Length: 267
Image 1: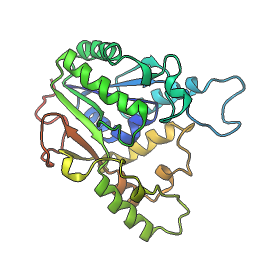
Image 2: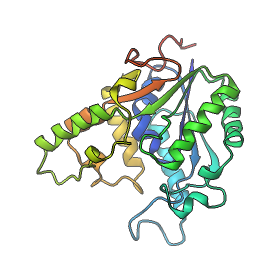
Image 3: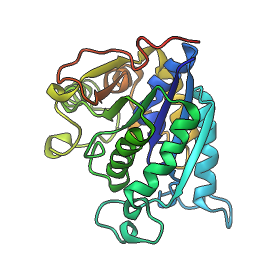
């Protein structure tokens, strides 16, 4: 089998960003490995959600393993850094935060896993981390360097197709204005995602949308039933999240690929 290593910043990022391609690769007989930089210590939970004295990171790690099982992951690793919070917050500079980690040091940790797994494919995020989150930007920097160190040639930068998402949101708003779901205002967020013209790879994951949504539900501390991701109707979810988008390093622009694992045999 070929091996897909998918690198993410926090618990729950994996199912939102790459849940479809992970389940697809697993179903096609490939090995899927999930690496998470932090344990999501600075996530937010409703009052009373955690048991008394239960640390949030512990719950999020358990949720990650539950999500990984749903998505067909064979190995889960955490690099051990601390969640850096949102850009511009004090958590960015906290001791041990992923944002302050030397890129070379973190890349060596990831590269060791890539070598152990003889990784054929690595996913990271685009250079702006999708929407400017510090830990997501650091995933890009660390992941790209790790691929160089390990000699992993096929690297895909997961991104958001801004043009597609805007089209989908407009359609959803028109069709579901009475659902009560609060939509993000992408019109005023020019740093959100990448234009379609820069994207090289579009993977149709509609067949895996059920697994993707089930994995989201496994992250109950962060993704509630009232969230944007779970409250929208199934058809709107398919329109917004039924395709996962990537920029293949060294290729494009122009969408010419539809499968991260194309040409890799199931040994």
